[in-house]
Image 1 (tube, rainbow, N blue to C red):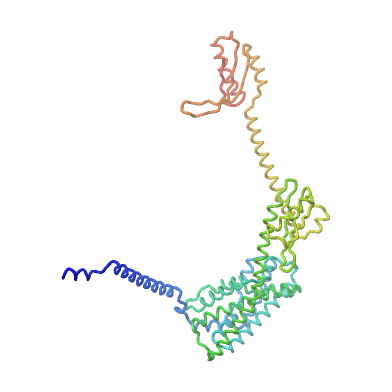
Image 2 (cartoon, rainbow, N blue to C red):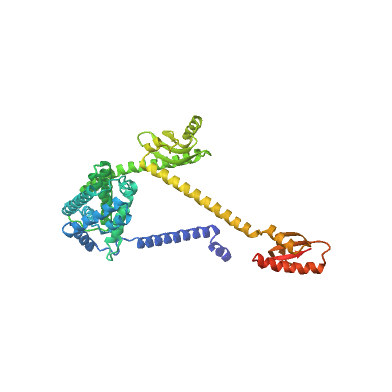
Length: 483
């Protein structure tokens, strides 16, 4: 009976497996909790936050009076010169010294703390800063002799969702760094990343030259960056529980937040549409390049330049400028029929042949002319390098051949005069191989004597001829063999 009771107390295999699974679940839960706590410690924003110092620092940078207005004007002039001359260094320098971030962070702080007095104050100072920036940049571009927009200017006229993303993450980095007790050098980097100065300068360029697409596109980019920096500031201020200046009941606060969300969505819609257009244009550019690369390979003609023009609301165009023998109409039709397989159904293909003729060259844009000239220069330079390489190779071979030859006829005549019993004279570079496998190329002269010449005389004359040839030809390696 006792043995049976002891057996009943022993847990079965199923109970052991259930106990092990339960222990595994408990251990996994503990590991997950510890991992969560560790991640919370790593990404804890509230630790080390200096709320009062942050609020004081942002309020100090809002005002635009006296020296700040002059600093802003100088930075705007530097940025305008950089955009006008395509100097990235000047643009970056201008963004580093620009005080534009102050009122933008002030607006975000005011929205997050319900400080409506500070909101109007920050908005007024931001308006002053924008007016100074556009006015100074427009004045510069009115006086500047360079009217052609450079690539740095044109890059600020088509903002997309990517610019909004840069502004959001840049704004988050700026307000997070600014809310710490230990200040860092993040704010200058945020000013560079979010690029607040160049859009205002580009807007000034558009105003000075009455290019309204430049003006509105660049100003929209500035507005996009400013709003999303404010949004990032508002998010961090709300998360860190900055003290509110005025009480707002929950119902009113919900309406307040909905209003902010509506503004964000309204501002994002144009950038989203532009971003979709950029994607479409990139896809079209890739398809056009692949189409030209696959279908314009001819032995008697060559592609000089390709210009692809994307249009979201009308027909796209691909202009191919060729040089050489003109393509036949059948070949053109065959190429056009292949466009559908590359997704280029809504595209018009124009093949410009004989592009170096005066009439055709005159109709090309300046960009295409420069491209064709540069392409011809590169190809001629490559051809010249290939010819120089060929000439050098042939010259080296010729030098070797000249070094391998001797004035055989003259030497033969001299030796026959001095040695009448000499029947023939031969010269060659012979490869001598030793037992250990080493090889050496030695210039060798072979003398054929008449049969009546004594052996001793042959050997003695061969030695004399060898010494004479080494001095005569200035080559101490020459050997003579006699038969």
